[in-house]
Image: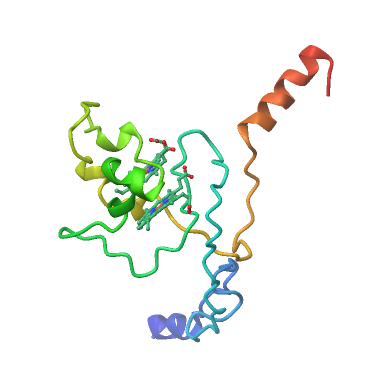
Length: 149
Ligand code: HEC
Ligand code: HEC
């Protein structure tokens, strides 16, 4: 009897966290997702936010095949193709295995380009962030020592 009473009194706690990707829509209901934003295709290299960042892709890649049979990216970015295509060649890190040996061919761990490189869309960020460029941080850290702002 006691067990029955307590289970009847139980109710789901109110949802306190709001998922910015879902909005306030209750979990059991379907959201009304925004339209897919157009992919930027300006062919202008974007600044890297930190030195080890895989550069973002400044062109469309819709429908590009990347599987064990064919790699559309390498059709332009492979070392031997870059004179004809004027695409930037892969840097040497793409030829290194995990022990830093430089291989003759693209290392298998760098074969699936879109694991690391992504195109960009004109879209409002879904979550805010407080990321600061290292140059901004360095400037702030050195400012008191030099007396400059
Ligand atoms: C038709 C040729 C072609 C194909 C195919 C192609 N690219 Fe490119 N890519 C270029 C050219 C040319 C540039 C130089 C900037 C521009 O013109 O867009 C470039 C620029 C880039 C850059 C910018 C590099 C930097 O230093 O900022 C990245 C990253 C990139 N491509 C990745 C890819 C990936 C990943 C794929 C496959 C999904 C791909 N590309 C397929 C021609 C190509
Ligand atoms: C595991 C992550 C990873 C994968 C997979 C990967 N890259 Fe990269 N790529 C990077 C990083 C990190 C950089 C920047 C630092 C560097 O050069 O290593 C980079 C740099 C580049 C650059 C700029 C080179 C330069 O000298 O400015 C191009 C072009 C590029 N990648 C194309 C590709 C293509 C095409 C593929 C697929 C064949 C690919 N990458 C696969 C991580 C990756």
